[in-house]
Image (tube, rainbow over all chains, first blue to last red; front, side, top):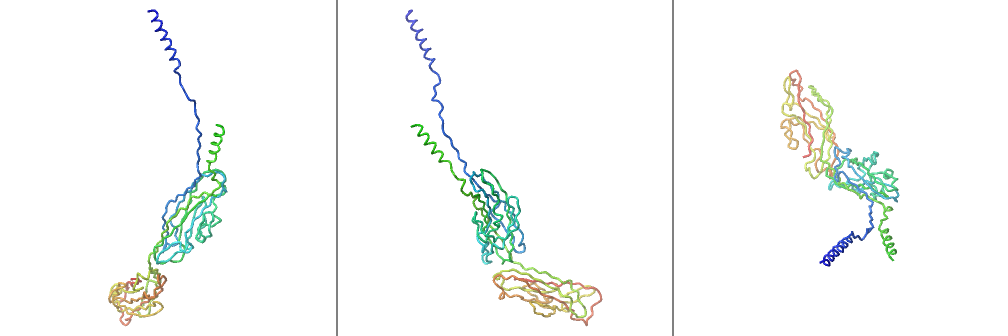
Length: 189
Length: 184
């Protein structure tokens, strides 16, 4: 009986000794390389994509303005110029009126406020602005006013809010409904 | 060997970083559809009024009509019409009445001068009144229109009392001469 009791105690001691080995087991921290890339961006949104220009008795009156909201997020390394362009697709036929014929771009005048500066009213027969590939003779912004900023050489973010209004300043046009397309573009080089 | 692999992975990861800053960045050209409308029009401005009519038979002061038009030829087969008339055969009233038939209108229309008694027939193109019409003229037939004619017309009008031997009752007389230009 003493032997049996001694054996039970011994088993109990050994079992208790085994419990003392059940600690946390870990493989240790592993590291994962992490990379992220933010691409450059530039966006342009217009307040409207449809505009009516007064003609007939109201010729010479400016249309309601188009508001252009520009935003950019750029890295360093650019030449640093922000160039704007506004133009019609054709010098000879900016607007077409079917039997009424064509209205040339030289019959339209742009009044624009760009980067807070109101430009002098400009007839839309200006030379091309190379940076935006505007149409020669159908461009409404003079080359001298096309470069809006020239200090964007370092990483930066920014916005512009510009306005554009058009007026018909040509000769009396035959009665008709005329339609055409006007382009606005911004480029950072 | 592990270090070599790790270095290669690092080098590959470095190549993944884009090098874009030297490229132009464009917002993309946005387009605006432009619409402009010119309606057909004809406007009339009269100067020189009011008319003071001498009861002696002499011509009154001159009324000048300045007309500006901008129309589409295909829409108007009858060209441009003008007319002058009184609202009724009683042209003037006041102390008594003076019939339109006792008045004549001397006009210079398209540089051609003519005189007509104001008792002409109604004219359907202009809506003039029967028996009180002084003139109704097709000043510019469609045949002379260009494709989309626009331009100006300047005409003149003078009234005269044609029955001075009949002296009306003394007093003031008033009336209205209507002048219209129509492109039917």
